[in-house]
Image 1 (cartoon, rainbow, N blue to C red):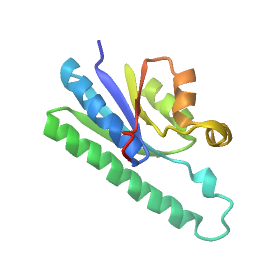
Image 2 (image 1 turned 180 degrees about the horizontal axis):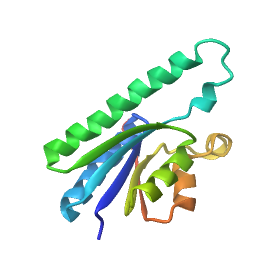
Image 3 (image 1 turned 90 degrees about the vertical axis):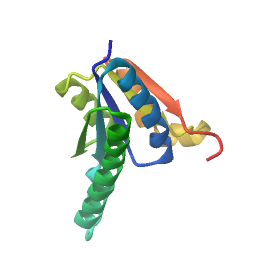
Length: 144
């Protein structure tokens, strides 16, 4: 049913909550997991100095986050590919889905409510509304 499962991550505990579910599904369906981290460099382009350093730091954070998923996949006996890319998060996720024949997306939610959610928007919400494949959303544990 699923052979390619995408787990977008921002390195947060909300993203980490989705990893266990993705790995369980991948093991169950003998699927490969794709760990994706998107650096949105445009958010820092207005900085006069240091924007490049910020983007480099975010790329390093992305490598660490995707490596954690790869390590967890190896422990679970699941194949994993890692990618760190730049762009707008929800669009980069959609592009990755199309380019890699992804069957399912598993991603965490941050549980924002009310005005916070309205003002900030939600990458997960945009992916759910626009993706052409099933999206499993995993809520961050309430004790965090």
